[in-house]
Length: 75
Image 1: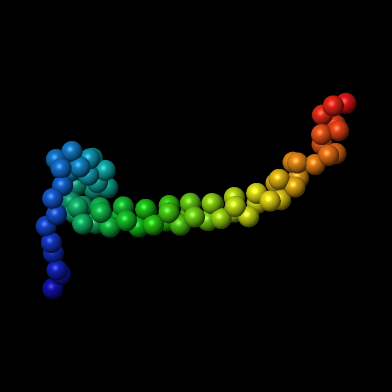
Image 2: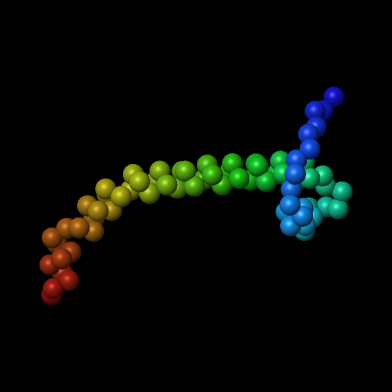
């Protein structure tokens, strides 16, 4: 047997949820579950992107902050 609970949501949230349903009989539980899955995917992608950015910073600094490029700028 499924355990079910009641949560309080503002009417504006319920209205927004009705607008984003994929099909008319989709339950709010399904909708919230889909949003959770999407949130986790986005969060993981952002963490990966931040990690890549962090490890690329030293190399980018090395490539862009060098005397050879500065010499060419003054030619």
